[in-house]
Amino acid sequence: GDSVTQMEGPVTLSEEAFLTINCTYTATGYPSLFWYVQYPGEGLQLLLKATKADDKGSNKGFEATYRKETTSFHLEKGSVQVSDSAVYFCALLRSNDYKLSFGAGTTVTVRA
Amino acid sequence: EPEVTQTPSHQVTQMGQEVILRCVPISNHLYFYWYRQILGQKVEFLVSFYNNEISEKSEIFDDQFSVERPDGSNFTLKIRSTKLEDSAMYFCASSEKWYGYTFGSGTRLTVV
Image (tube, rainbow over all chains, first blue to last red):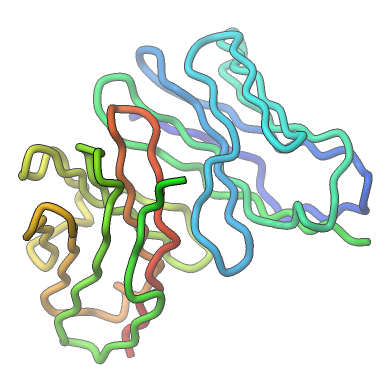
């Protein structure tokens, strides 16, 4: 079935470092792709999304581009802050129903 | 900004007891969902609900689980006889269309 695979963590970075979290997907049809973020003790928040090939989602300095040729949706941020410490989930929304499939999550810790 | 509200934020229950997790979706949304996240694991789809009936459910959603929209505003998840392995964070979500999920902040259920 449709699924996403994301880079395992945990990832520990220093402030102002470059962050990449890899995400690849397997799907029939043309899914929409999302990154969700879960800050400590909080729920899931939509970080960014892309609904078709070559779309770039961006928010809060994070970016991800929907690459159909490589079936990828890697998350990047050029200069992380301590406040970016969270768990990041890649997710796929199938075009034939309304179900989100999540990756396993990547824990990111940013040190001052 | 409209929110999905979940109550309680944390519930502790004895094994074998019934629990009801409550959610108030965004008022003009038509699609409702429950997901769960066992500690340290991925977020998993449980059930989707549309037009006052279940539209899809996962294999996790067995006869011990039920959902209801009793009064047009609340959306509840009932677990009839809780097991230790039901301990998880339960997320409610709603959407206006097939995209654009909004998640609540979750209910942490601990079965002892």
